[in-house]
Length: 212
Image (cartoon, rainbow, N blue to C red; front, side, top):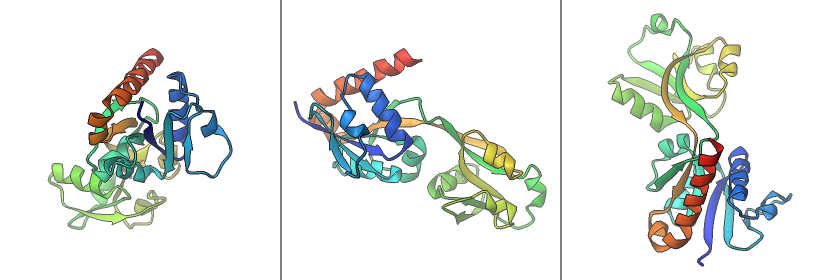
């Protein structure tokens, strides 16, 4: 059996993925121990895990450093990497939305709609598909401030509970798409290591089906 390398996003996605892998019979005890190591193996030394920033997961997989991994759909849409999306893992569910003040249409008096977001590619594609000319302002944190201080008219961001929007007087104006964690695979690995990858994917698929 060829050893598989799995890229995991640090944080909640990694925790949920480890739970899922344990349900598939993989002993992930070494992954749950307190450590600063970024590369670890399961207890049976069948899988190697690399822990990276969420936005970097598709890059490691596309470049073949990792055979497969788990990443949010938002990252896949934003990074546009050449990987296979194999499964919707159903956790980490949220939405990509346009948000702002309810009366924002009346407040737009300039030529272009001004949009704050860290998701530049998603924002460009969404508004281009609607033939709307926009001025995109890249913000990496607290994008809700954009409309509040008058920097932008609206924001494009992930919405989970909506409580942060509500606390700042903003509402969801449009839903762009639904998001969740996805299992992605390197294209060459799927051919070269099919006998190792497909049983794991099928096992995960069964677990997801049982959890429905």
